[in-house]
Image (cartoon, rainbow, N blue to C red):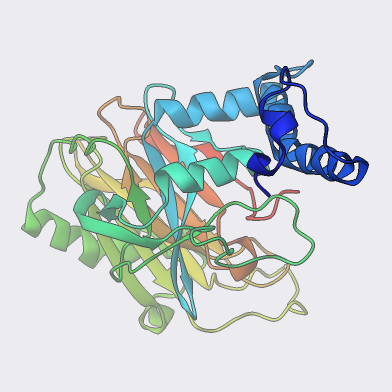
Length: 334
């Protein structure tokens, strides 16, 4: 209703002598016209008013997001498509797990995980192409997925990730560690590796053909030659009823080798039966220099869908790979 119907409202200093009915009508019209204006003023005051007590959690989250540090992402293979999940920042301070509030995760999703964002694909120990995000977690107003009863969920953005890529990076392309190996030396090492480790782990040489072998040649910078990550997997699973002693042969064996004075030698080993009573089997994710010291760390995950984000990092010290950090968070943490 327009104020032009109420002359008294437009010209309050001019004497007007409307009828009692007309006067009441004009007063009602003025009140109705002013309601949106008053409500707008209240909203403006509320928006400008500083909160009595600050929110230190949000201040920390927003400060981190504004700095846009390089981030490390895990790739999750889902039936309805691949998801990429941020787990940590990397840089001079090393591997720093991301622990954000619900508001912080949503802000990160809006700023760094929306469609069109390009991430670097890490295959083994080197950047191999890029991956483009096609949908953020909350892009479009609806959640990409959910976990029942979860109050705070780590966002997972949608992307199409090539096979063999388990890690993605944001930020500048990491420096490639120097060093290259001889194919002949690597081949000779792979031929003799079984005789180096099988006897000490109680594996008969006749049982070695039962394992499926994966070989990763990774330029880590730990030595002048590439690091070899060799994984032996046996499809057989030992039941929990098998007694601990005598110890059955491992169903998974991981051997990491590096070049020393007298050739390649084991610098880290891991073995497990892979059943409920023993550590879960692991899988190699890749190698990335998380602390910018020129030497890449080796990263492993677990072959367990219930712990799909757990990430174990190893750093090379004194001719051996020692566990230096573990990311143990699940997607739901609240």
